[in-house]
Length: 556
Image (tube, rainbow, N blue to C red):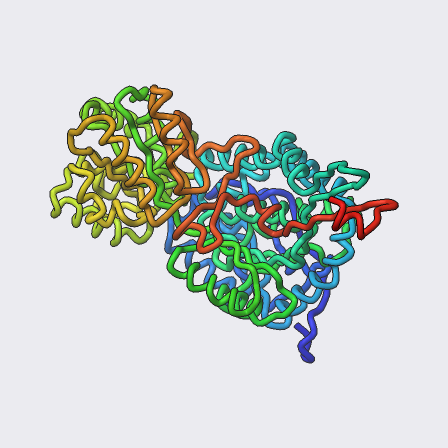
């Protein structure tokens, strides 16, 4: 930043994908991302550095030391260490304000671009996701995402931006009718400027939802999380920005800044130029933030915690249901949309738990780039053990897991992984007295609640009541063979933004939303979240020729 407080434009030093090999000389230059504001790479107030996910398992002391050294002295030789994979500039107050101004200046002209052309952004984005798949996966594994999960994250985005989904979005954005000589239009208008706050646990795939906000005709200011900024800046600067240039979008329609969360949020809330704030985070903080947004006249779009329920009926395919339940352990449970609680018909409880114990054996720790690794490191595990011990003290039974483990799977009191852990809870009536049932855990920990024996009609009523009374509302699943049970569940379950029947709880499919929910998940305005729709608003238009206004009112 220049002495007078203005922000200086500089040239970018982006490079090819960083090597994932650790312990050898890095084969590519350090990725370096300035701020991206008004179509230009722009200087920030210092840098934050990303070290490889593998390094945090091999030598956490060296990794942390490297980051601290470089943040104090960017010219240090530490920048050449193979553990260091990239850096991102940090935005100060002036840069944050400039990004909002650039977005507000670009928004009106971008909104005037025909919908058909804006929708091309989604098509081109999908094409780039396919073409740059390996680079996408490298970015995620560099940030400690297991490569198997990174492939799922990539495939999920391909569904969100599939031809089927894009066609449905366009239909929802603009529909026309002919009626009594009138051309009637129902379409959606962009809100204006959307400020987007992705989470630290999955910034890249979450930031990709910002493309849908752009397709709606909005300008976007994207905050890359300060502690894990690299993949977000790569996606916005190297993937999305060139497509927008190709489509002739005005400079400033996309701005990407890495910033301190409170400083950035305060700037957005104070700015009269920001219309919507897309907030992804915890429920307690998110619901407070919702009220602040409303008080400041801004639309809050919330993606908060999930505490998803899976119901297993007596005629379910138990092996497949158990397979779906073990999705709870993917990424060590640090994905908001994994299963969090299982309700099981008492007639099949023992058999089902046997299947779960078998399925758990394939969930293992390891280095992020290793094939078939599904667990991620958990640095702070105090709450995991508090939840587990409380459940056991209340009469819960440990089915499997319950310990820390080393990277090779060896149980250890000092390991940075947690074993996949299943706790049996007997009785539906008092299940929510257990914190691990009532709350989102965000650990590889799942309770299996065995309902009290009762008639099937009574059990189905109680399962549906339990599901609907969940204060969270992201996803729910049912495993059942009976069409009557399935139909009753579909008709009566009102909780959540997505309901999956005999399917992967976590998997994504075209047309249906991947995010959104009710209660503590989505706030007061919570529902299934299609970002292209949530960041726009309905408008009706009637175009008539030769119509008498008097006859239109009194002759109808």
